[in-house]
Image (tube, rainbow, N blue to C red; front, side):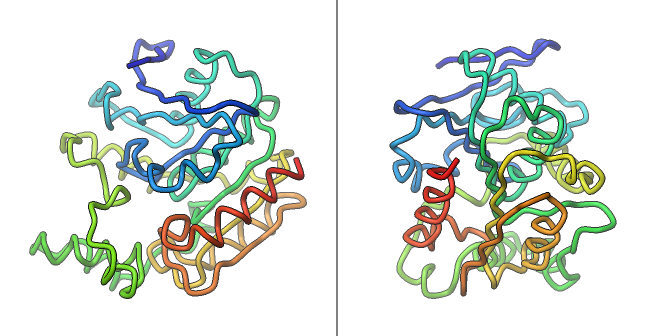
Length: 258
């Protein structure tokens, strides 16, 4: 199992697959690299690079504050270890928040940028409704887990795909790491940095996403110079998996132009 080590000594597990131009795939909050398992082969023409965020998978899990900007620095440590100076970056959910900082803080390291089901965060981001928050926080854990699945996927998908699901959290995470991830995502605010992004950018979102409301997509696209916007009709938060036959070609076509 290969690892990269950050300047502060945190070990990060990473995975490299394939050949070609480098493409970093960044998953959502409290998830490890397996988030991408079902669609990674769609990007087989690229050298795909994933990592387990600190707190997840086989990476270290220090009990200290995490931030999306800090996760972006962790991605750089992995790229340095692999010897990649410049890569395309495709981030979904919290991974999109991480990708925003990567592109804003280190423009020389990012080729093309894809932000999926993401948000600018802060005062300008559109937050999920109280009803969604209550559904996820209900004391009946089975009901809460079902609510999360229904935010990720449509009923039709769930009826024909019984799992296991790779997008609902790393089951091996300790409680402190889950709290740290939640705080990192909730604390994200890249609004002021977005206009400085110079990478060609594509924003992708499902029209029926209420977990990370779809209204965030045009906010990002309008804020990042020259960004393109693609909304996937009927898709919820895990659009990239359930609607992969639509989503992956959209992303591949965009990357192919850059």
